[in-house]
Amino acid sequence: MERIPILKMGSFLLVTIQVDMHDQLAMNLQDDLTERIVKCNSKGVLIDISSLEIVDSFIGRMLGNIAGMSSILDAETVVVGMQPSVAITLVELGLSLKGVRTALNVEKGMALLRNALELDEEGDAGSED
Amino acid sequence: MPVLKTEQLPLRSDADIVRMRQTVRAWAIEVSLSLVDQTKLVTAASELGRNTRIYGGGGDVILEIVENGSRRGVRLTFADKGPGIADVEQALKDGFTSGGGLGLGLGGAKRLCNEFQIITAPGEGTSVIITRWKS
Image 1 (tube, one colour):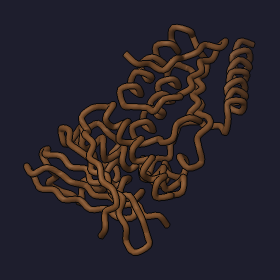
Image 2: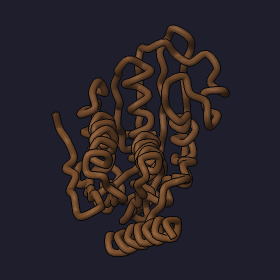
Image 3: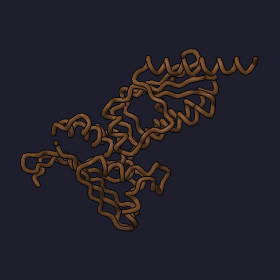
């Protein structure tokens, strides 16, 4: 079965979507990611969609699902690299991706995840005092 | 309205939808739609193609390059022989879904196009015709 690779980098998981997404592929990614978050004890997920030429309601829903599921599993999700034409179309379609954190590029997305992780660790340290 | 080019593609699998999207993109480029308009048309086609496949039980899409005076555009006709839609007004409302979707497909696709027409009746299948003109 066709799958999108998930890379582990420290506490984070990285996904770069470089193929034209069909619905089954999106569903597989959703399942694989939640499994890997638990297996790798990941604290963050970065999804790079800079190669995606469209995001329709199905892919939008998948991104929302991933963000929701990972949040329940104590991991932060950030979606990076959305093309401007895709953003314009998404809003007109009626999809605002509520609950999905976004960043302009991979660098900014990683910074966002690292900050979230640090805050989390500080919070943990604070509660132990 | 003169039709300059036409092609029919099946919509029966995920792979068909991907192929259809790529063809729509190529035709949108051919009539010189802007990148945003290309994206809107392909996104609308993706929504409608999914409807045809899932709710209509599979069907076809007819792609056409049409001309109106000096304007050119891409017209897409999604046709299935499925159960049809009893209440079109309700189906066009955001948030309405009979499947597991978000209910943005039909209404969203309408917003992404210049022209939108739906021909359907219970038991008689559904045809959705959309056009995006070069502005």
